[in-house]
Image (tube, rainbow, N blue to C red; front, side, top):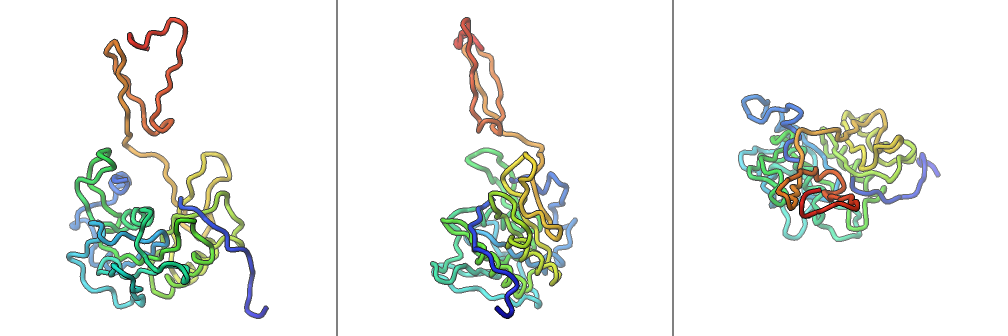
Length: 272
């Protein structure tokens, strides 16, 4: 067929902390940042949508959007754009047209990139502190491609096309396959390639698999592939035995579960 480069199935992809930016040394105070330059940056987030009422996206103090911005806000019931997030669109066209995030993943990734400083943030009381995005002054453009049954390739490619046409400066994508795809069949690689040709960098997650070899997703050479390595904090569970001894177990291991390996003379009431 004339004009068709390739055809492949529209497969389903899956979705792949408060101190991240402090840990890598990115400054928090405006005195150390170039907020006027940052406010002209538009980050396109391709994910599950956004929760507009979140304090991370309050637009107090934001001026008008940059003149280069070409996008518009898709109308939806009980949802409006503001000066912080300038574009919302959902796919596919025949589904419920609401960019509202009912999963939380898209709100998380958007706030990680450009969320406001929010004090007293925690996860059920754990890790209490201040949460903020890497570039809080930047604008956010939201492209909702993920629904309750996953994220489909056709919608991801459509979102890339729209983000490029809208004039975003960088694209953030945190979805991927169970196993890495060949570049010619990988919608993220294809979309990111066209974005790069238009001067737009794509930052994508390496995935949730590992640490075995060959488990990294979104590894095309024109993509900035992002993965977690380590951090300077840990969550612990305290276990107190009958003799008063207390042990701390990292919650990151075995989902916080402690397994006692008993033997014949073991007395759990008098320590392990």
